[in-house]
Image (cartoon, rainbow, N blue to C red; front, side, top):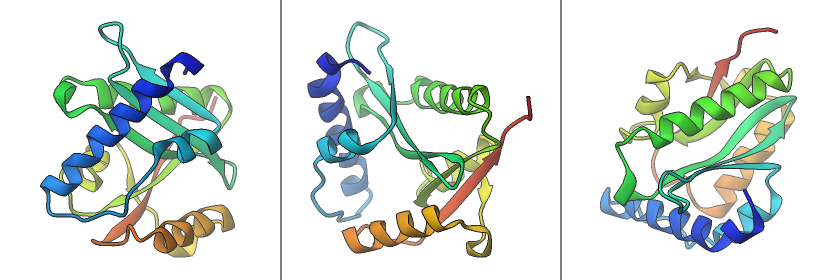
Length: 159
């Protein structure tokens, strides 16, 4: 991410959020600038000279945690999300991380099932660290628990 990408990143994030409304989920208003201001790394997909997707990460409990993965709906289903996810996993492995975690809606096809197809499994609450527990509580407080949510994990190859 470059500072000049900010406006397009916000546009992508807000556009991606419209998919939730189309699925009948009423999420609280979200200013992506807040998230972009606290994450550690933002990878961007720029297939045509413009930002069309993003993957934002933080470190939780020694793991890379995917805070947000978003692709502009007008550019969806072209592999951008999968490429961003694989880049996150590759970066995490290169950083010596053993896993990537995330929280997501369990049943939405482009959430839990999509991540499961890409090697993620449900992470039982008993195996959460304190960072993931705080993340979950923050999401709860923000009002996004409008459908069943899960934490997921993908183990990375040890280097």
